[in-house]
Length: 300
Image 1 (tube, rainbow, N blue to C red):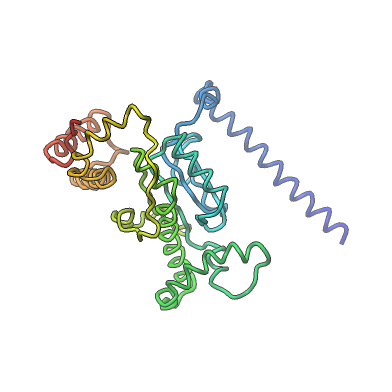
Image 2: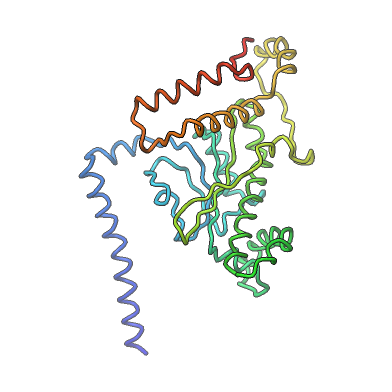
């Protein structure tokens, strides 16, 4: 018995040492390509996305998206749940929007999720975990008739993972910090991803673009105007124009949808495009948008 414990301890120590050695290898590789890499990294971060994912070790956001440190602001928990009263995740969302100025939030679930699988069973996993999994059980309860039609357990888990991502996207849209960002002129879009562990590919879920405008009035918040007094007159002068023109949110969503449509028509992949081709794409899409009256700059 004692020898077994010693062997297991040595084995675990080797794994721990491997992680530290891996860090040294990582530093050596990065500095070989760019001696100033870490000095540049220390100057600050400018991520374009906030990704809320699962803590599962098989779904590392940077690795599966081939992004470097500083490109994605990341928050992870068991089964990528957005609990409205969770101070941790709300602080992350607020910092990402108000300080890092991100315009995109991604909820990323994955197949073969242990948390999702546990939530579909009645076996207790103990204490706080049971409380946390209740958030998933609520999603399962809502969609159990659909999910239980599937015969294969892995398919049922994948289906609930899908539904859970959609539910958490809704929770982000309901978030007061996200809603206020729209009023402040900082549009934030919310996306849903399902990472398929068995293939390595990310599946972008089709999330209705009308979600933020069609939220139940119970969740739609109105914020007091915090504009300084000197801006009051300008606001009053522009009131008529605002009432006649589409809301910032609707305009941004239409523009995003139109951009995606036009880029798909051109069938250009950015991975294979050089800078000149990319410039042509930008020019062509910009020309299309300029011809659309909805996207012309408004003079106030």
